[in-house]
Amino acid sequence: MEFSIKTGGLEKQRSACVVAGVFRPRKLSPAASLIDRVSGGYLSGITRRGDMQGKPGSTLLLHNVPRIDCERVLLVGLGREQEFKEQQYREAVRAAVKALNETGVPEGVLGLAELPVKKRDIAWKILQTVLVATDSTYRFDRLKSKHDEENKPLGKLTLMVERGELKQSEAALKQALAIAEGINLARDLGNLPPNICTPSYLAEQALQIAKKHNLKAEVLEQKDMEKLGMGSLLSVARGSHQPAKLIVLQYAGAAKKQKPVVLVGKGITFDSGGISIKPAAEMDEMKFDMCGAASVLGSVKAVAQMHLPINVVGIIPTTENMPGGNASRPGDIVTSMSGQTIEILNTDAEGRLILCDALTYAERFNPAAVIDIATLTGACVIALGHVASGLYSNNQALAHELRRAGEYAHDRAWEMPLWDDYQDQLKSNFADMANIGGRPAGSITAACFLSRFTKKYSWAHLDIAGTAWKSGKEKGSTGRPVPLLTQFLIQKAAKA
Image (cartoon, rainbow, N blue to C red; front, side, top):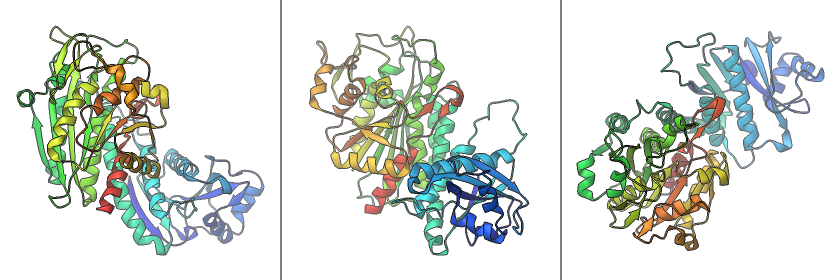
């Protein structure tokens, strides 16, 4: 979708449709009031009759509004004015875009950015408008033989702002468009089937991003990882015919002396569970087990497009986890790149086995911070549902920055404990540690496992098992946590 910024009165716009809000009960927003004045009280007559009461998410499409140059006026319910906050703003934008899309209009003019949202400026409203509109119109139908072309999707959206907000709005729009592209890349990769999106395919996508944005890229093959001693990562790949890869992308937006932020994304392109095989029901969703990797590629692409003055390294360990005659078995003991030995008690706890070697590899970049992103545990879904990602960190300041970025981006994370008390659950009689700690606190013990490989730098872990994709009728990748990661990097670059 194409977006643009414009100043002026909504009532003067020539468009297929203009959008204005109505608060509950039946109170016109400032933009709607201007249209009402020009039209001789047409909108207030509509609200008095009860056709639009301002209920949140409700819409009413009007044609031939008197003395208005646009073809249609779309009224959107905002709820009660005193309760209008971030969530209500996003819901209003979503309802407006959905209604515009369903009418089949090619373009629309949105008069919602004028609405005050407590503690949020125009830049936030522009960002959220773009992200919500892009999400609402996203389709993944490239693999269908026939496309539904009955209604062409909304192609252009103009956002009305005050004249004094124009410069800030245009800058915010550039950033928002880059983030939206990063999210869509992550969604596309997640939605691709595992017979297409293999480790080699992910490596190809990384190389294409590097070529387009002039980044440094490297793809380590099995022999390279063997030389580095990545026995843990390679143990997961043993049952697959697809070769494992370790993808490294480097974006240099600042001076060489500035320490980079390293993003490490779990890239299991299909997770059968290995010998500890998963139940058949919904196993197809295990193509989403590479959403951490997809979010790293999406975030690095967005950062490069924004030209942020910061150094960022993306590391993606990627493989399939398949059963087979050569697959790892429960009871096997492997040696990680760090030299620590791991007893594999469950081959379905494989994400931590590939991440631990990638986290050790991250040390060579002398990072300012390392953040790993992984669809790691079903236990995190039980703890936090599908609203917040789990956040663990060995540095309280880093955890606070990530939480703040998530709140701003509306891609929230919730900090979970990483106390030493949980480490005992990983004890093994035969190796330095086991790869699982039992059912109690499963998400926490998985983070505790990773923490054993991150002692040389500030580190945070995002468990996105509950937020990276949706099931059921709306099955598909969400692109999270690209909004959180990009906002964190924007904030980090601003401080540099």
